[in-house]
Every structure is written in structure tokens, then in C-alpha cells.
Image 1 (cartoon, rainbow, N blue to C red):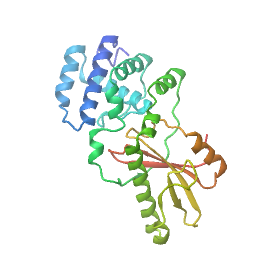
Image 2: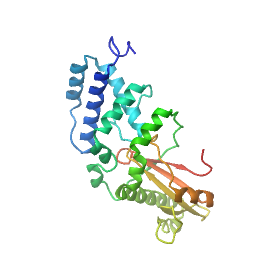
Image 3: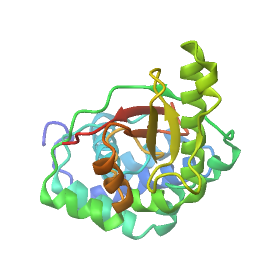
Image 4: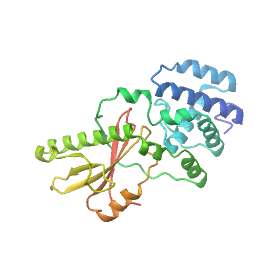
Length: 259
């Protein structure tokens, strides 16, 4: 690490500074406040004694850790997957001290200015990421997927966006009759289902919508009802993973069998 860090390794104090600064910028971003990146970078350079390149590299590693934990990241700092355990620990310390950030990562101020349904771009599912026990414990500690599932506003926005996308898909393929029948699930529909949709073959699709403001590698799970539905009706069960909802707003599809 000496070559990338400007002559010496990153100390625990250095990591606390760069992670703390990253988190401060993320808090401002989620609150819809302007961020003076140049000022932040000058402060980190002054306190750590490091140059721009190793700081940028470390910020990319922070983005990777936050992505794997299921949090949004700074958009101009794409993930670099070379992080080590010391950085993971530094990120955990900052998140543990910032419960308001965990709340904002699910429902930031900017979410309230979003339209009732967001136009989505479909992507391929991400490749599985290797996860060791240390990372899994950190994911379980903050449990962002449960926070997202419990937030009705975020979930409702994801569901509305998928309903709109499914209707547009069928209309574009010459089936406006089916498009008009797509709707959010309601009482009487199978438990665990979020959206009732259809294939071009007119066979119903029971869609579960998993929504996050984080990136495509953010973890998520199925509830007991969703898992039971997947086992009972694998031919109809579908997942739509909506991610980066307030950024590029994308989603990918999954269907049984999983794993």
C-alpha cells in the first residue's frame, strides 16, 4: 500500500479522517445540500498529509464498502473493490455514530421531491460478490434491507415505478389491454406479492419489488411470505430489484430457481 499512499500506510487516524469526510459529504448530498468537494479534499490532504491520488483511491474503497453494506455512495467516487478490513472497521465506526445517516439512506429529503413513479432503466443482474464472515457481520449489523422493507414511502415509490414500467412495456409490445390490468397488490391477492402483472402470454406474474437508493450490489432478502410464494408458484413469481432510485433509477429481474 506504500506506493499508493504517498510514502506511508494509512493509519487508523488517517482512515477516521477520510471516512468521516466522506460521510459528511454523503449526509449533505442526501439532505439536498451543496457540497464543496474542493474544500473537503483540501481538508483531508492537510490533515492526513496525503496527495490527491491516494485520497481518491481510498474514497473509491469507501464507496465499495458502503455499496456492499447497502448504502448510497458519492456519485463521483465509483467503487474500488480493493478495500481491507481496517477500512471496513473505520466505516462501521462512522455509521454506528451516525444513526441519522442510516435513516437518510432510506428516506432522504430528496425523496419527497421525487415524482409518484420514477422512469426505470432495465439492466442485467450483477455478478455475485464474494463476501467473508467479517463483511456479512457488518451487513447484518446495519441491516439496510430490513430498513428499506419497513419504509412504506420508499417501498410505495418502488412499486409505483414498477407498475408504470410494466404497463409501458406491455403497451409498447401492442398489449394495452394487459397494460391496463397491471396494478399494485391488494387484499385478496397472494400474500408476499407487491404487483400483479402479465406476460405477453397473458399469464399473471406475481412480482415482488425490492427498492433501494443504493447500488446494484446492495444486499436484500425475501420475507417468509415472499419465499413461501416463490416455492408455491415459481412459474409466476418474479423479483424486480429497483436500485439507485434517485440517481440513474435502474432495475433488474430475477426469477426462480435462485442460487
